[in-house]
Image (cartoon, rainbow, N blue to C red; front, side, top):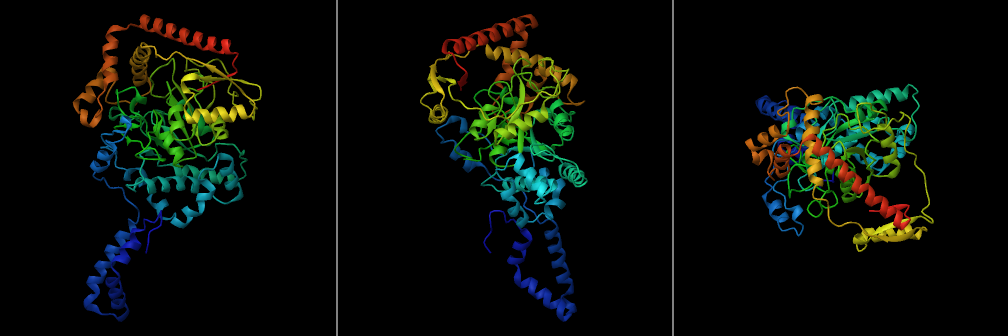
Length: 518
């Protein structure tokens, strides 16, 4: 029998591989031939064990051929040293759900695909409201899909580091609330499965930032996690990321972490990078591994993976969403934000996370009612800043054509091409300070490190496992800590922030711009 795309029925294959033994044993029982009873009993015992474990299993395989192929890629950022994590047994992801997955048939999975794949929150809520599916089935569908993809050595993408063992039970509780008459808005996050980037705290799973140093960091909920859960969202699990939000190594690929391995792009596992550092969040959206995902950004870490994975990424102004309980890089620039498949879903997810957090010093005094409004605004007559250095990019040209076709006026502008060399100093100096604060105030008791120096030493003990691409930025931060005091760091922040604001304000003023297209 030919296998379908999702057919991993090991029990059926077992039967098909041994038809004569099965036939003999059935005849033995039918004709009551006592001499064969022990042999047939043994056969059925083996079959029962096989049937009980009737599920696809992940097995570690030799990656050398794929790595040699990738070494020939024209893009050096695709020259990976490894694909799968050396420490993660993927079978542990879905182990808590074996009973639910065993009763969730391949036929039901196929039947739910049109209701879930590429659908937005409003469509999914409509399907639940109509009785076409339940929230429990929605979460089970995603877990089934994650297992299906990650056990296939031609399709795995390493987008997920961990799954919440209580996700399906939580979804069932929400189903009961709905059955008892709870009203659910069409754009509500109630019952909607969310993947969190694994630097965002959730008390049901470790918060690792992709690092083995935080493998046992069973920290509490981040502020935005509490907000999501208060709005009924299901925390499905944690998404892979570029380790330490890509402020860790130099010349290393986006999407790699020691905990999760190398995140791969669903649109071309060996062709395209994932962007980063919210790599798993972006790839999970492209692969339909959850309804929505949450990322974080210091400089490009939401927008880059959203772009690379053809998703919608919203990088809010720092202070719009809380960072409390998120493993930090920079208090000046860090923010959390949505990665979704539609603008409407980005709005819904943002609003479910929004709220005033008195512990986040970047937050203005806003009310809990602050929210985004999804509106259809015409670009007619708007002055659109076009960056000269991007004008030859095909996707950029397409965006310009769409907007000018709807009436926008294109205005060519130029930006300084050189990145301020002291920008990395600012990020490094703030990460030294802010990570130490996080580890003291939010990390679980007993984690392996308490500061940057201890992280450097931890990785140096086993670099092949913990830092296969080196830890160049960690080394830089250790040196920087000796050179840059608190007063110097604050002066550097003020200088760089003021310079950037003046440059941007000047560009808008000179061109009379309404929007800058980046």
